[in-house]
Figure 1 (cartoon, rainbow, N blue to C red):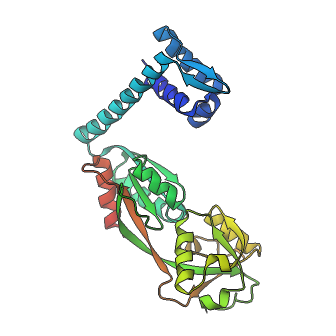
Figure 2 (figure 1 turned 180 degrees about the vertical axis):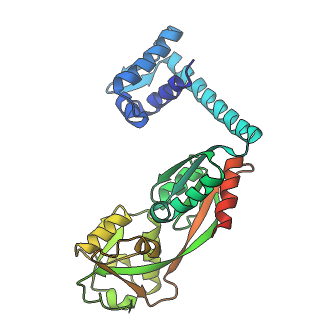
Figure 3 (figure 1 turned 45 degrees about the vertical axis):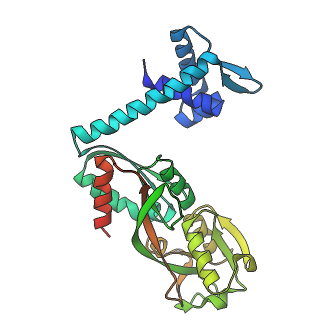
Length: 296
């Protein structure tokens, strides 16, 4: 029996929707329907039935759902154990990163790690800090690199690289020729912030609060879903923003923005390496943790 049939069936039961499952797996809806029909033909029983616009499992379907989940978990556990037993240089590694480390920092580290461990298959999920924390807590990811720390009893981690926060303004802004600026000078400016859940936004808000400034007291013209969107919005003249020094390092010097240092030694934050709180890890995960901790 093809394991993919069980995986597809489990997701259909959980999403209650064929088209959504098809989209998640990169399949067509008829292909998903065919897989469900293959299971029904194999067991000779109806597994799913309509409940309005949604699907729900029949009694037999619910039984198959529960055992399918166990089959998938057992195979994953077997793969993890065999990966450790067979060869520490082989296996899979599921990484997650918030925007700044994911887009501007990690690629060089992953390349160097892959040079030493060419047979480890690496996947990288980029999302905001809150989402990466959740996925690590749920053990969907082996390791996360994020721009802020969030208390979570299912996650542990260590400080990694330090980052400097910089102010960016359009090139024709009245502050553009300055090298440094104080937070008190920025109260009446139009602002652009990252979306809620972003580590950069959290760091910027904490910096503002340390100067007695609440985000609610500012004129916020836009909240952007990525650092690139923030840079583009500032470049277009929509406002000013606080971003990571790493984003500025990687930005085209021809872009029509200027970066200024913030007159505060606390205008910094740390990136964190996070991982699920567990007693043992696969060898590939331990290898990457050792590698990235040593390469600060």
